[in-house]
Length: 308
Ligand SMILES: NC(=O)c1ccc[n+]([C@@H]2O[C@H](COP(=O)([O-])OP(=O)(O)OC[C@H]3O[C@@H](n4cnc5c(N)ncnc54)[C@H](OP(=O)(O)O)[C@@H]3O)[C@@H](O)[C@H]2O)c1
Image 1 (tube, helix red, strand yellow):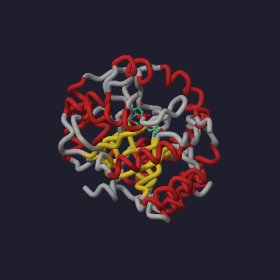
Image 2 (cartoon, protein in one colour):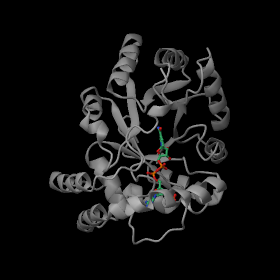
Image 3 (tube, protein in one colour):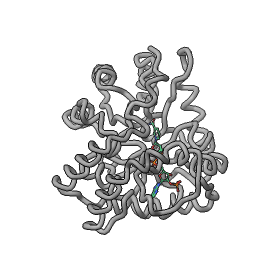
Image 4 (cartoon, protein in one colour):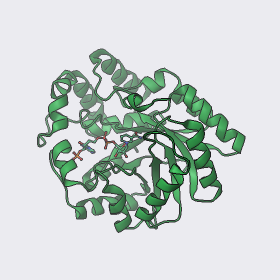
């Protein structure tokens, strides 16, 4: 696998915490199931694992450290919170490296566009020390992306990627130019939550109730025409509704990050990103999505945390 051309990324937000699993997803899975998912991902050459300190209520990073990180790529993040304190990124990365049992991470993202110059300056220093191999930015709008890229250009370092929320029903970053800016500049666009917290899955497949499902259940009902359209397109390619959501991203040159805590999730993702939807199918899905006009997470849902 080439880290500059990944087909899909394994998300770990749902790894590890039984409380998180039960409350937010309706059920928890044991550690051996997630370890089997990781093993299968490696066999399928899906080698990049996306992490952050708070994933799985703080358990995901420690878990992957236990599983072993020697033969995978680690994508980790610095999440700014509160007032900037010099050395905060170095301190946070040291904690990550201890979790991973590593002396470097493959990709390191500034999680929010907060104190961009100060945090990025620290990230650049850590990159030069070899502790970070690629630099990305997450939840940045176009002007913030440009600002970060200008800083990295000055330092002679390429911007690896932009990691924002994107899905069939949240295509704002495409409509406002971020996705094409990335493409024009050879920067990857990674999409998080392409399944919209499970709302872009088959309503006929019954799963256990959870807080998330309760909050979004009325919206999921309004998505029925889109589910029907996804089902129609999926049937042509012999893939399921959630796989259409994944294939949709992959077919547009966007890298989907999918929350995979079970081996079946990995199988689905692997199959889906090897399917190419036609331009006509893409247009059809987008037209229906625009018509239902349902917003679940919203493209820029962490903007409230950006106080610059
Ligand atoms: N940069 C950022 O700010 C940011 C923010 C959020 C997330 N992320 C990254 O993006 C990743 C993905 O986001 P996410 O985990 O929140 O949401 P997601 O992948 O869009 O959706 C997760 C939900 O989809 C279900 N699911 C996953 N694969 C499925 C499949 N093949 N068939 C049916 N259902 C399936 C899960 O089921 P189960 O309930 O069975 O697990 C879960 O309910 C995270 O793990 C994280 O790495 C980044």
